[in-house]
Image (tube, rainbow, N blue to C red; front, side, top):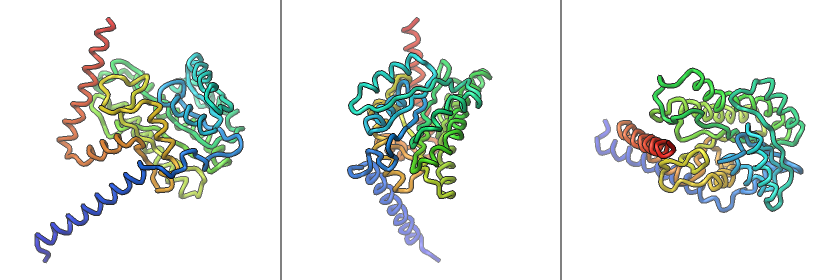
Amino acid sequence: MYSRSTLLSTAGFVWGCLLLRRTWRFLTFHLNFAGDVQLLKYQRPRSWALVTGSSAGIGLGFAKELVLRGFNVILLGHLPGELQSAETMLRQLPGAKEILTVTLDARTSTPAEIETALEPVTKLPLTILINNVGGITFKPYYQKLEDHTAGQIDDMINLNARFAAHVTRVLVPTLKLHGPSAILNVSSGSCRGMPWMSLYSSVKAFNAAFGRALAREFIAEGSKIDSLVVCPGDVQSQANTRALAPGSPTAETFAKAVLDRVVTAVRQGRVEIMPYWAHDLQLSLFEALPEFLAQRLTVTSISSKIEAERAQNSKSL
């Protein structure tokens, strides 16, 4: 029979080892001074990258960073004017190569329309796909589930989940052909479950599960496609400006942090990453909390965003 002190000592030792391992992985991932930040693993002559939802925000940040790293880039969005402005900006970057645009509405495009629009892309040496498109399609942003309309529910699922699944299905054969290649599925820290954001939390959980499942599927097949889930916290973007967490990065800063660490993450055997150090630290602390404290923290966080949204709406009246 083990004594109580022996059990406590053993538990403390195990906990200390786990903490040391987590700290080591945190440091070796975020202090990425010698990693393949140029993504040379995925570069070929005339390599292409496609980014969905890339006319603004984080998606445009990804596109800019990919151009700076030597990739030809395909911008996919639903507003032709915004796509044209983004294309013009990217062409002015040093070393810019070819830029193409694809116009598709992720909420309404049928599978046949997606296949037709992407057919020219399947003829290119595509090595990177970033499923970035997503967001909240209604106002107010924060609602109880029963206050949503049926149309709002369908729009959220179509924009954040269905579209990414169809785009990936169409482009996986091309990515396999030109591997090593990479698929990044952008999820959100909200996938842990946020009050008054049940739909958004759920579709972002789909993105995370989709990316993890693909990673394990490709590994099992011996495929040359690397699949990573990218999990942001609060990011300053065109669509997210209210009651941001202290130290929230800009869309461009976040996109750079992601691409700087993709190859390091794959080398370390990760299938999901929080590439911005502050987000990773915040989530680690959050997941260590008992549920009653996590409940209090999430309610406080979302309540502050609700108040900020109401204040902004009242000013615009």
